[in-house]
Image (cartoon, rainbow, N blue to C red; front, side):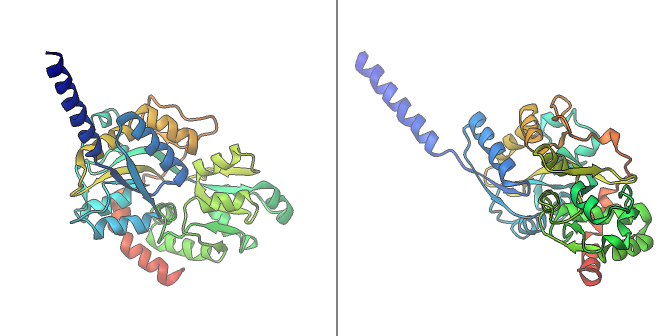
Length: 330
């Protein structure tokens, strides 16, 4: 009897080991930064036992990959990026519909009607200023508090803005102006502003970094990025101009994912209090899960004067807008 028991135990042990070896690796295309991606995927693996690998790149690059690979995806998850980009991928048939049970209590702006994407944190645009450099270069110039203030010709070469062709941050800003002013006046504003831009980096985090190091005086950035660098000791002031745009950073499952079960678990994880507490502690973003807590210094959506941002419009006209931008501005 003892031998039979030992044999059963040995078989069970071998079976368990076999299952362990057959655990599928979750593959993530990540638009959010390496530090956050690494921390979140590590926590996910600790909680589920599912290993994760990821590729970090810009919004434009990864969304194009997702659409190109839709019949045979090389990843399971698209992590990060504003909703208009996920809407674009969904319209191309590149995203899987999944209604996470954790999404039922989220605000409506954070959940797509077809369940192809779900927001996990709020993105709010603003103006960042390196206070020391501003005082040195513009001692008699009024501080910029509105989008129109950035058109001051004295600021020529002193403003940094993300390239909207590569970054969802830059595209959200472009749409902010087009929807705030209307197409004709919006393009007039963008073309006039472009004369003052000293650099168009591809990364959404670049303006806040370049302001923090004192390479530029003014930057167009997400408010949470500015708050993060200010908390690290940089002399940055952030301004939330009237009539700004807000959106959400989203997570989606890729159509024809080869690891659908793990992908669904990852979406559930990203909507959890634990994951959003971690995300906010690293990025100063405002979580969409109302049980999660944002750190001191984070900006809340209810405190900002926002336009009624039309994400569907932003998605539908994205290609045309970016083509016009490339020809007219950069």
